Length: 251
Ligand code: 13P
Image 1 (tube, rainbow, N blue to C red):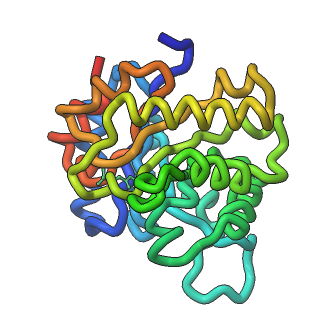
Image 2: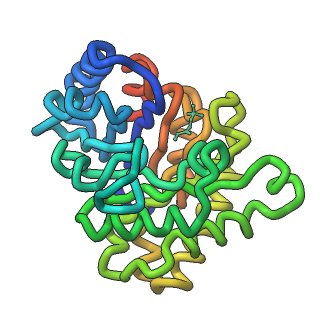
């Protein structure tokens, strides 16, 4: 067992209206009170203010799922770090596979967002992960290495304490297929090694690496038992308290 805390995050993606979000946030705030891990709820932009008012003062951090690469300006349809800060957001998820593959965000754009978010004091969850064909052709480690190195390019060692990495194999997201705890742990160990090469052993030992991809109450504890898995970034199962709470309260 490492000295690192566990960090269980819910990525609500593009789900829920404000009343639905409020109901879930209230249920989580009540059920996770006294929970011993770190928690995050990342609702869609239009829900953030509603959720903020409920999780304020609780042990649930407030997340956003993306931000613009610029502070402000003529960027129709984008949301800025200044606007997210104004809402009380603590953490921004960046480089999610849906941003990379559906919305074609590349490593350079993601890196720009990472640096901007860190410069504004946010915690960043940098998502990395390989496609099925990349895994099948033996390139999973190389893909995760590139995304990690390029995502962190220019990030100062003094800011790394506010960076969390989420390993989300694309083939496991929303498919019901979970990486085996062994396979996930192997990639986590590899990413940790990459962070060690960039920032030194001490930083590698400290950085939190979440696993994401069909995490459910039934598989959470086995995944978390692995040495290099420090938490979860949960999608589908984060949409209901009934499934998120058992994951968040795993022991
Ligand atoms: P699922 O838990 O639905 O597979 O989604 C994982 C994910 O993409 C979290 O960011």
